[in-house]
Image 1 (cartoon, rainbow, N blue to C red):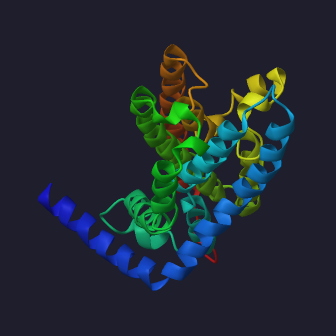
Image 2: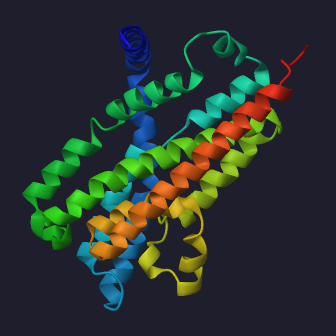
Length: 267
């Protein structure tokens, strides 16, 4: 166990050095990720001012600021590198190491998130306590936070494992990167980034609830905003857990089956 943590520490040190070398790029990616929710905020905030039957302006502002924060926390990109390494043969260097490849992705994801949150997190906390009247009062209820925090953690795990599955598709498909791109575009709608789930038509909302994307971004925001009752929130946490279990099993199967048929390109 001691050797295991020593290896973890070395990988963390390596990743910190690498990320700090490209810290400006990481911050730029973080700002780019926030651009789409900000555009959606501008659109739906104007709609809320004219339509009193939907979300209030306070709820709209709070929702999309939460979406920015949640999206940075739950964002995963390891599938891009996994697919690339499978397609060009670099994955072989991980297969001959005694340390599992997945830990490199977990540590890389964790370190980059710490850098990406350097700007949004302090700003969010500053505005939350400096201008509380501009936010929905629901987010100041402690019981909502007690459910929001585990939901956010589950959403992070779900996003990471789902992205891992899309990376493993490269064992079978050379177009795995294009499939990931389509997934990312579809996820903007299906996760509630472009349109809040509560404003979607009931049939669309029901259909998208059978996909994992809602449970990555929208569900934590719904819980913190009080759009789900306590019992509904517990049910949503259960759905997140079930999705994680199913996708981990799928990822394990894709990995095992993929290695059995994998041939290094050019050999």
